[in-house]
Length: 499
Image (tube, rainbow, N blue to C red; front, side, top):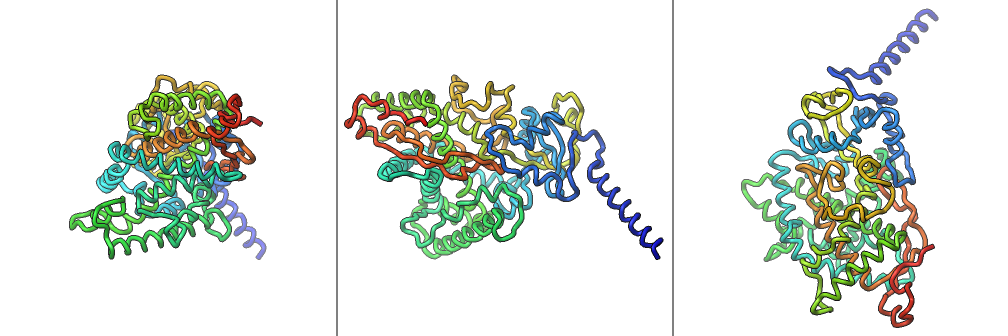
């Protein structure tokens, strides 16, 4: 009997050993990039999601870059992945959207964003939805939003200045979400019986966390938040159907008009997923960008001084000092654009994006990538484009961890390039990028021309790998006109106190 038991144990050992060997040495018709596949099924998931407090390239990526080079293989929860920190390969991956690659998100993210969200749709349907969104966030529409954005920023900062301290992470999120939700679905928190905003509180934390849907985990909270938001959006949609607006006033109205068309490709499920994604992505980038910008300016008085001078010059050259911002004044904010570029480069709010190979790809033959070794990406494998590795590469940016807006001098308002992909690239370049930049620029104008601020506590960052401020960022705001009248010679009337 013991002979049989021994044989079973040995057989199991052989099977397990063989399985582990095959997992760690996947078949490939060409040459795979170097790397480790980690443990079967689990892969290197835990290492990837390990929290860190650095602004630098995530340790998971940085350690493997040193060991394997700019392109390496790994796996997350049973999924084989090629990680690219190479600017040329990243650029080509974005450019080959719909040909060699297609947009892809892990199952856990699809559960949160929605199975029919615009990020996972392809071809004509994706193009159609993108054009719908551009009607809201396009150049002409943004011009019309300028005064609304300025009013919202002015009103919020005035309220903050009346408070003893302000927790800026929540305050900026509330402000930007309020504006975005109003433009999308005419949502007004003060008039609504339900708080739509609070369901997004832990969303980014859960979005980029270990996808374990157990009560108490960040991922579970994220899923529950989505369910609540979707119920509220569904309720709003039904209400709007019963009582339609006579004139199209928000994006919801345009969606309803589209749903009425006999030949539409839009469904209610797609429309609701679209609303959900737009609500999150259009406010999260701008809110986090503003928070990071204020934190960086607090620690860099020279940059704050030059930014303030640029905006005070706008006021001095204005015929009517009480008039609102004009589009021409917005476009003249050269140093402000440099601040925004540098902020989003350092923040890396979205640290990585994913694409799936449509077929087996030889990097040298199919993509004309000049590498020392001719690597192959097998069909069905996912490429993780590491944006932070490009944005924080000393080859691309001297002293990459330094906040240096002057590095952007003469480069204008940056779009996408091989070395700058904060808003993605290719066909999937973020359609809300200009909206986010406009909000940041207008807010900074309203802030530095009338107020100064002092950091009280918090401001520490954590990446998991998404960016968070776990202790918030508590700030005290002061009205500069009041301070100048109180003490005209005081420099503290203009610039924050430094610790």
